[in-house]
Image (cartoon, rainbow over all chains, first blue to last red; front, side, top):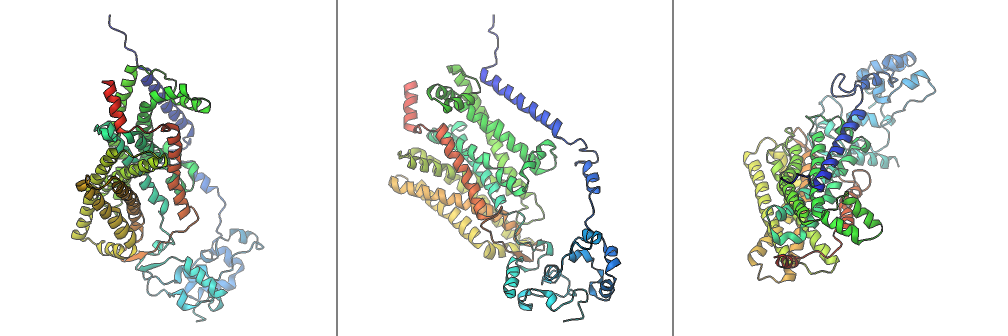
Length: 152
Length: 412
């Protein structure tokens, strides 16, 4: 009679371990895959409704105009007329709901975002090299952002 | 005061020369030091493993004294390989999500599986089969916490009869054979990730995976030479010169191949001189002068090639001490040279504009997630792990090839 084939103990142990790892991976996958995953595509379907449910941060230009119509009228006569208020001042929904919540007074950052010299910007856009232009700390010391052509 | 503020803001603003798209003018590249370390550490793993396979698969008996050391080196570095990626992503707790919902078209998701395969199915298993008999023996010989640890490592298999140990060797051999293509896959994959970025002329190159594999082998073997020499120095043991000579012979051949393929890559770039060539020339001359020409090419490749090549010809005439010093300095130079190479690939590829007509600047910070300090910590971590592993698994005197031969003779 041939001796009965027995799986060597170390191989058996490794096989059991491998089965254990694969099983725990499958179980983890079963529980950890979000339920709405693949509802629309390779992402969590719920993510869309969650995003929709968030409070808006931006109020929009119309909301600004309700109180600041004078500034808006000034702005509309100059180059910056097409810019959105909140593009420079930051999100304003909180300020629009409650005027006591302060909105940023601007002096520097948003200006150089567009006007710092870069050869890839169009020629008609006024550009400066900050160091050669002015060494003070605020652009608004000389310029009025709402009426950029009025002052040098 | 206000002038100082402007200067401060000016310094913080991104610096660039020539024509750079606005979205490229960022203070630092998207991928910085952590992404330099990731292919570097992965490469050291693959190289150290291939070094170990020389013993198992190609039967290079002279290298047997470093077999376990190189396997442990590969293991310690592999455990640290995904850390730079995890830290770079910023949300390390999300790392398993890529394994839970893997996308088959995402190279990084598949890398998770390649990594898991290499760690669990190749390296750990081969180490276990190699150490199994010792674990059983050590768990009987030691006391206290160590016994518990070693007994845990035996996973409950205590059979150390001769046929059983023979089977371990056989399985280890098979795993080693499977391991070579796996090591190539692990590191070739890193090269593939860069090489498949076709919009970037610095990266998008079919030679990239091969260059990465060759440089990985070079750096891994050099790391084993370094570790072997340092370990023997710390333990005040004499170095087995036969083993060291053979290791450095393989280091030399790997370096020749690596230099040839990287040279071929550059000759091809220079001769075809495609549209991105001018900016690459500028990068090599100005932006990457020290890391590319000095670090990677001269100190990392030419000098070790000359040193090692000289020793291949004049091995018998150079006294042992001088030979050891030459080997050691070549290994250190190669290790640093390959780090410079990874820097050149990762950072170099992001220092020029997509317009191919302008370049950006990058100055590494000291502190912060992507700073010097973090990089140094991440590079030191695998060495600390390796020290712990050596304390646990290599605490006895390293067997020399002479003692192994004596053992073989005794066995016959």
